[in-house]
Image 1 (cartoon, rainbow, N blue to C red):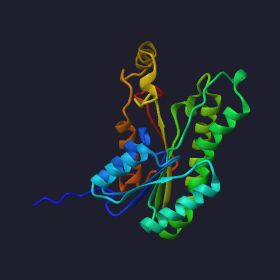
Image 2 (cartoon, rainbow, N blue to C red; image 1 turned 45 degrees about the vertical axis):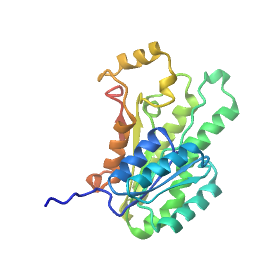
Image 3 (tube, rainbow, N blue to C red; image 1 turned 180 degrees about the horizontal axis):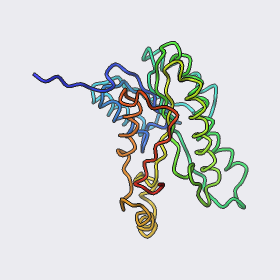
Length: 252
């Protein structure tokens, strides 16, 4: 009889912004490979409850937590709660993010501060909070969600681009600091991905994007989740400090 082997059996993953979109796809993908999964989001709403139920249906321990990832104290508290409930944290996916796009000449300080806080400070907050437990375990994988606009920039997204570029610098620095304890830190830079947000774009805009992509299609949340699974598992045990573009060749 052939035994089924799951890549993340016995591991615990934390996925921020995990109630929907890319975060949800990653949470479910990790759970399918045997990981127990804690997701965090700003509110314990219908989306969070639905994802929590889907995780439980996969036969793993799954739980949703309300937490503001941009708040340092909130993050410390929720990570302590997760450690109490799950006993360990092996994988952290820093996925929480927002956009507040606009031309730089009209961008307000509040728009800038909000995006930097949610997208970039949250990565610091959660990495700081999980680092002691991973340090004690002498193992861990941290996956930070950047973007192709963090690599190449984009008009009308100065705040978003800056936050995602900052994540890349943070990732490379953390990888160098944590490597001696077998804690890996990598980033994913998605391109044009089909989500609830992009689904509302006009058809001509979507076509324009697809025409620029060598594979001539938008990516799916599963495309991103598959790369996250690779980085979360021992398949990538010698990969750290890297940025993997998931963009269909748009950024080459």
